[in-house]
Length: 437
Image (cartoon, rainbow, N blue to C red; front, side, top):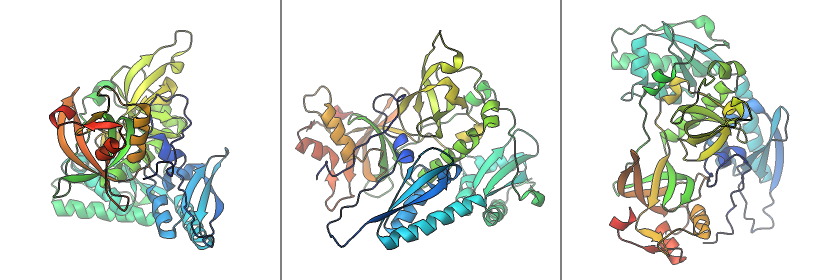
């Protein structure tokens, strides 16, 4: 396997701590390289202007929409920000594939321009049932109807804000009615205001207080097998070393996180919302929303340290925050942090802390920089490729599960046991299971 053939991770971010690889890469530049062995297989490229506000709708965390277009047209699509109101979508591939991809990209841009927001009034009982951990029906309805659904739960009656095209909103309305009938929910009062099927400029109610928000318990996702052989599908988001790295589970949770990041970015990008959800006082341990300036997206985070600057105003205070859905720890200015809107806590934190099972550094002390670099390459760190993982054991560290994993790369013609590959390359040595945790 040749490591030189894989693209290196190069990300511009001056405020990010060492080891940050998981969050910024996929949003900023996603480039695939074509191996052209046949001189007749000529590749071309075209540029398509995409409005800045449309980009989040088009890509998402894993680039789901773009990935679908790429797979259908056998092309590669990346985005360049030259400044100004538009980004450039760069499409590379065969002449025919590029033209098909261009048409699909323009169709997505057109669909975004037709999005509306509809307000659907529901009872408090309905909200509780839709958002309960047991039912998770609200996410299911959003996925089925391909809409974004927000909750405004401060006033009575409460309301759902459904974002999508006219037909998607109607599908969401029908899905909601069907689910309520299926579950035979008692005392549900479902009222819809059909006059509000056009765009509404909705101003959220005041944010909950810190004490109210802290009472809402939310935990990190757990790693369970999804197949009879004990394996599950994961993607590596951040690597500190083979002894400490972070993964995310694949599947519907990936799409849920995509939607969450899109929703947060859309919400906090509006000045009025940021002002209303400004964090009056930041303390270590607070859950917050944070903007990563080089990425232009908003994420959920936990404050881990504060570095006040006595010579500057409070907004220039530097915070270290852990991005709880990826594992990165980054430094940001306090002016880039806001209070979390409560309904942005509807899904569990997605970063899962892990270490490799049955292996340790060759010298038994610490992993070399080269070993860490090779491990990042072997695991496609932040390239969002699926690996097969099997939990060999787990322990609780600082009230959090840490999983000891066997990782297998099935993306190549021959499956690669990543621990065995590190040993073969003389970066590590084998240890027994008890010593590996």
